[in-house]
Image (spheres, rainbow, N blue to C red):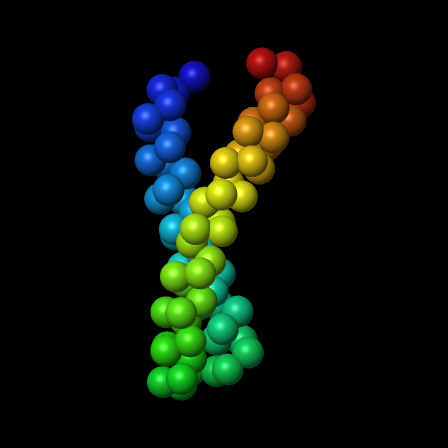
Length: 73
């Protein structure tokens, strides 16, 4: 298994990228491509990233456990 420092850095990066993409995508669906959307996106991202990171710590371990059981590793 990968060392804990690498896993933590990966979770920070993955949660940041996912929060960025998801808040942008759903904000765009809701508001369309406007200057207001861009403004709201930045606020949503700042809130979503820490939430996504905390949830990834929980869901990540659970996902790896399930995946290992499925693959038998």
